Length: 139
Image (cartoon, rainbow, N blue to C red):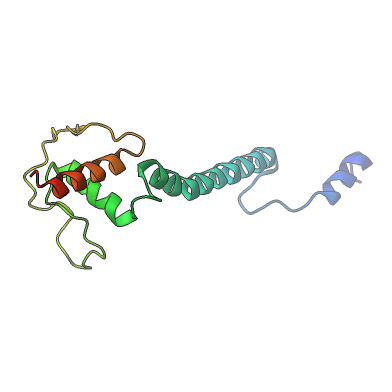
């Protein structure tokens, strides 16, 4: 004879089979973990999709090409006005910045760059100032 109540037998027979490795006691927790992970991964994908275009606009993208923005970053990062961004970079080329001695960062466990933060569309002003200096003949 079956000693379980009839209602308990009915609920057990109507339950969906659990995924492999999930016990009935943790089924609810796994469901909410899965939902939370899907939300977090979706947020990461959206963040990644919008970060690059928004940063490109912050630095001056419609006015400057991505190549010019990259070149300005090189000049700021290495404190060397002769630096240019190499595109496309050679497949087996040297590491970026290899042999560079002009960067004045403080190296250690937590490196500290010595250049100041780049403001909103500041790269456009830097390029315009450089072009104005070249047109007037000032080095």
